Amino acid sequence: MILTISFIWAIVVGLCCCLWLITGIRRRHPAEPPLENGWIPFLGCALQFGANPLEFLRSRQKKHGHIFTCKIAGQYVHFLCDPFSYHAVIRQGRHLDWKKFHFDASAKAFGHESMDPSQGYTTENLHQTFLKTLQGDALSSLIETMMENLQGTMLQSGMLKATTSEWQSDGIYAFCYKVMFEAGYLTLFGKELDGDQSIARQQAQKALVLNALDNFKEFDKIFPALIAGLPIHVFKSAYSAREKLAKTMLHENLSRRANVSDLISLRMLLNDTLSTFNELSKARTHVAILWASQANTLPATFWTLFHMIRCPAAMKAASEEVRRTFESSNQKVDPTNSRLVLTREQLDNMPVLDSIIKEAMRLSSASLNVRMAKSDFLLQLDNKESYHIRKDDVIAMYPPMIHFDPEIYDDPLEFKYDRYIDENGQEKTTFYRNGRKLRYYYMPFGSGVTKCPGRFFAVHEIKQFLSLLLSYFEMELLDSDVKEPPLDQSRAGLGVLQPTYDVDFRYRLKSL
Ligand code: HEM
Image 1 (cartoon, rainbow, N blue to C red):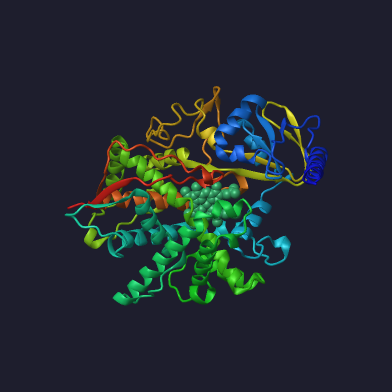
Image 2: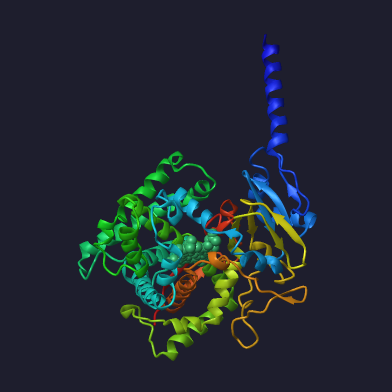
């Protein structure tokens, strides 16, 4: 009897495998890129890719050349590995869709109704909202508020217990998290204080920020799992953290706050006038903005500070640049009267900090740039080869392929603080591969239409953070020979990678 059941099972499994082989495996058509279906049904090559994307792509590039197709979790993805051909994808507006992924991913992770106007819940053009409120004139006021908030957090809010006499020890990541989260949160979402400086109000304000920080951390931990398609209800504490964040961002709560940024004020107005979202859904769209504004900035700030503090030449050059910048505008550093200002023009004119930030992000960012084919079309690469791409397939570019290419960057694993400074001391923008000048050599912020709209603010806020830190504090590593922590690859594809563990340092206020 047992033998018969086993036999029947063997036949069923065998038939399923045959069915999968016949129907589930794609066959390569002529003029399509080389294809790998992988060995696991549905998942295809997902596990090998996920274990180490860079290694996986390099090995396939060696085997197949500039473009190849892999089945990843049910989706056929064409990986484009030749930076000279990136432009062919980035300019292919007609055939490629970039919105669907973003809208679907955001609704899945944050639980709001679709922000895609074609779904009928809103007519807001989100892309325009972001450009209008994060760039141009709006950027100057964001920078101004961020500078005030950073000084408030570093010197007044009690987040740090800095004195001139005693060293304080902390993890660099923990430190960056506290300072950047509080200052960034208040800059976008405003303060409850509204002029009321009483101790009780300040403490309530601090408690709100600390709660938001804890909830953000809890939710962010499972973000990769949500993007991979797992439902949030599997993760009870992360779900509860996300909902607590959303509750603080209900319009009735946000409207009681002062100094709310243009971005959030406009999004509130458009949610109320152009959408049919319920109140919770509106609040969840603001949680999505909080995530976008912090999730990459926090690790990027960590890597920048970590590399800078570990490289004496970088510390020296950065300190001199910061000192010169404040001196040239006659500003005196005084922690008891912390009112340093850095204008957009000044921030744009700090090539050393700029290069340190770029180099730190070159080494740590891993955002997959994706587009989906709206119809069958022919993709022509730089070498004039053409490939058929099928409707609904994905084309992907993985920037670490260029960031770690030894033909573009010599000693690509090494942090060289002045890599992006030219012989005239200005931003270096000429990089070559095989003797040809590259258009795309640095892509932590994405590309083309999907390029991060907050990128100018992101770089400026990290520059402000470093400038203030270098002006007000002395700091050093607890272990001057500390090794670089490995990147946490579980977030590969999603942005700047976090360190797998924190690195200790100590700091105290300078006696000026
Ligand atoms: C170092 C910091 C940052 C990095 C590396 C970064 C990177 C990125 C990348 C790669 C994308 C595009 C994702 C894609 O193509 O799928 C993106 C989108 C976005 N980023 Fe950033 N970002 C950073 C900071 C910020 C900040 C500070 C803000 C806002 C204050 C922000 C707001 C956004 C928004 C709203 C989007 C979505 C744009 C859209 O869908 O139209 N980002 N970011």
